[in-house]
Amino acid sequence: MTTFLGVPDLDVDRIRKDFPVLERVVHGDKRLVYLDNAATSQKPRQVLDALTDYYAEHNANVHRGIHVLAEEATALYEGARDKVASFVNAADRAEIVFTKNASESLNLAANVIGWSPSPRGLGSGDEVVITEMEHHSNIVPWQLVTQRTGATLKWFGLTDEGRLDLSEIDRVITERTKVVSFVLVSNILGTVNPPTEIVRRAREVGALVVVDASQAAPHMPLDVQALGADLVAFTGHKMCGPTGIGVLWGRKDLLDELPPFLGGGEMIEMVTMDSSTYAAVPHKFEAGTPPIAQAVGLGAAIDYLSAIGMDRIATHEHAIASYALDRLSAVEGLRIIGPTTTDDRAAAISFALADLHPHDVGQVLDDQGIAVRVGHHCARPVCQRFKVPATTRASFYLYSTMDEVDALVDGLEHVKRFFR
Amino acid sequence: MKMETMYQEIILDHYRSPHHKGLREPYDAEVHHVNPTCGDEVTLRVRVADGVVEDVSYDSLGCSISQASTSVMTDLVMGKPVPDALATHDEFLTLMQSRGEGDPDEDVLEDAVAFVGVAKYPARIKCALLGWMAWKDATARAVAESADRPLTTEESA
Image (cartoon, rainbow over all chains, first blue to last red; front, side, top):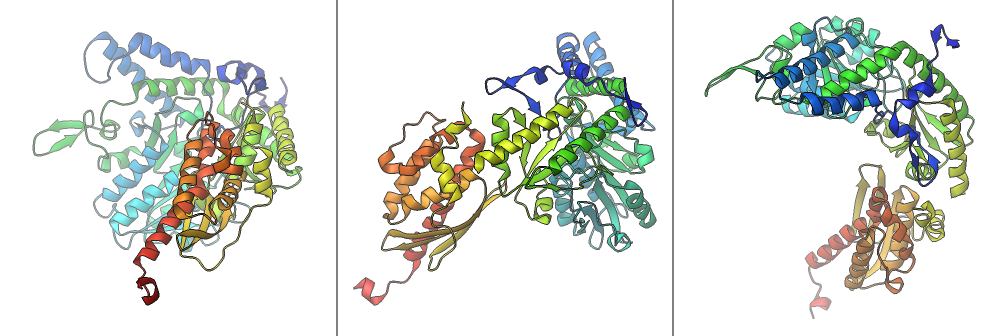
């Protein structure tokens, strides 16, 4: 095997054989070229088998019942928590809260911070700082909580290259700032943001740091302790896991302090008709029957990714991004929306093609078997910032190949001919 | 399913050279409709005089299907009495909801029959309907507006 930057290459051909859907042909005889990985990843057989095995052999509700299946299901569910904890280098397995997706994780974070008693909670005169490149799931929860509490929402703008404009960081994050929440990797621009500078300034003013790692966790090593944040959200389905399972990591002492989010079974210690006391974390934040099979599936996905190695996956995607940026830049009339070099850049690449609407671009690509995402990617403020109604986005993953980049470029030339 | 069933030449022609585009005066109602999932937008004005759709003018951003559909719509409704134009709208809506199985009446829908293929692509139906929905909304407002308007001596006579 050859090496790239000292990291052994992935055996992509072998990896692709693990993903049944990549064998598909569409529209009659077109080989599927799946370039919509930032929306959701495909699932390897190992994850599908874990889901089937769970339901076929071990299905029961967790943390209750003393029969064999209940014990096995609980062990599998809690085992998945251990795998996630290890995957993100959490100091304590109780720091891993299972949710249904990253949106729920971020809503949980925003609400329980907002509801906290003073001085942690939000009120008039307090500020929450986000960025203009957030996914709607890290904008709307903060709009809701600041509107309800009377706090003020502020944000970092973007440079023309699609990076955070941190030039005024000391004026954006102030003594009034209670929370700074930012995306680690942008789903629309592909930008990898610099956490160190933001965390340093947030610490200086005593603000909590929330990180949306939805596009980071699937693609690069994620170490929550090194990151230095207080709360980190991500989702399972973008990292080879099933839909319906998300994660919120939080510092143990902070999770202990924050009030519950949803109420119900599982999250309590003692209930009377007047009031209740709550279970210890993480269960305090996991009301009701959790997504058990989905957590088990996520555990299998983490085993799968870890066996390959997140550093190797990141290196592979870096090489793909580099090749894709080169080839796309050479397409006449194509404008990349986001960083045009691979420095601090992930393999989700948005672009505009001449004056063609992304819907038309995506439709004609689909006819050739090429799946891309078109639209505002739940990041409409970014589209407004770059004065485009929408973009076309190709996003790559561990199973993506250089051939697929070539297919995309050929496909775009066909799109241009079609609408000429 | 062949993509060419959606992108018929007649649709591409309207996309390349849209009819009646640009905002004009006078008008009785103006609406702004968006397609939140894809960011398509249309600002559309309607002028109704003596119960007839006298003018439809618009400014829009969007894909070929939404642009062409809006262009075709202006051809079909302008100059028609409001009830007739609404009937044409209903006919087009039925076609779009036909899952591609519709048998459109070319006498009623004219160029709009070309959109039968679009109805096979669920994600694109809302593109084809954007301009029509905006027109229906604006027309309802224009009609309500004229009903609210105090009658002049001449009209009441």
